[in-house]
Amino acid sequence: RLAYKRNMAVLAWFVVVVYVLLPVDFTHGLYFHMGETEKKCFIEEIPDETMVTGKYKTQLYDENIGDFLPSSPGIGMHVEVKDPNMKVILSKYYASEGRFTFTSHSPGEHLICLHSNSTRWSLWTGGKLRIHLDISVGEHANDYQEIAAKDKLTELQLRIRQLLDQVEQISKEQNYQRFREERFRQTSESTNQRVLWWALAQTLILLVTGFWQMRHLKGFFEAKKLV
Image (cartoon, rainbow, N blue to C red; front, side, top):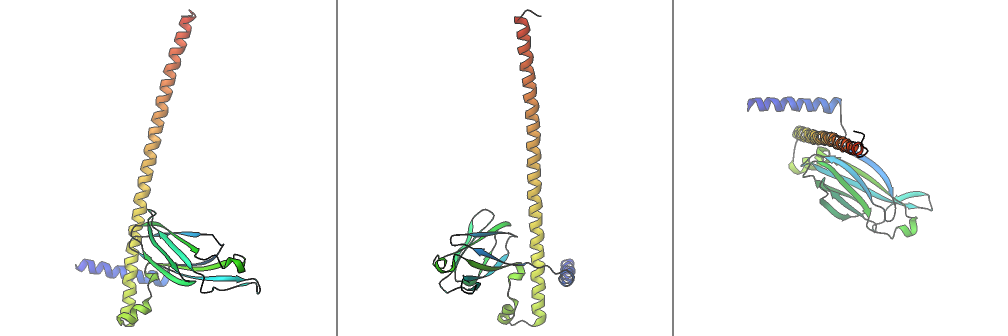
């Protein structure tokens, strides 16, 4: 048990060094344009048992001023999330600006799709809609200010909580990388096996073809009384 605590302490210090010297951002922010019946999908590689939070905001295009404006309350978004097995884990309608959250239960590529739940906006905007999307994975999806207020944590306790969450996320990422390595190894072995069987099949076909040609030539020579 003492060795386990020592290892956890070393790992925690490692997280501090990485967090200070080499900060990694697991929050992805972007914006894109969407048509009336268009559906936009994004692929996110996520470890298992990891919380993901997405924040979005929709904007309508105003031809009078030539710029995008905040969406009207009648415009909403439908969000659908599928796991690597194409099983739907989230399918819900939201307002013009909002936040969606889901937890992955299997590691791999998750498909996140968005499309508008209304077509009325296309009548007066020329079918132009801009969506701002921010996706946060792991501990970056946590609102630590809200957690501190809810659990009444001091600044030191909150920092320790963040470090523990980062250690847990690093462990999940390591497990996911091992999962990807195992899957790649299985794919490589399967490919090598297929190449071997294909080479054996080619050799067998050549032998059978050569044997048939020899018999055919022998019969031809015998028919012509050349041998």
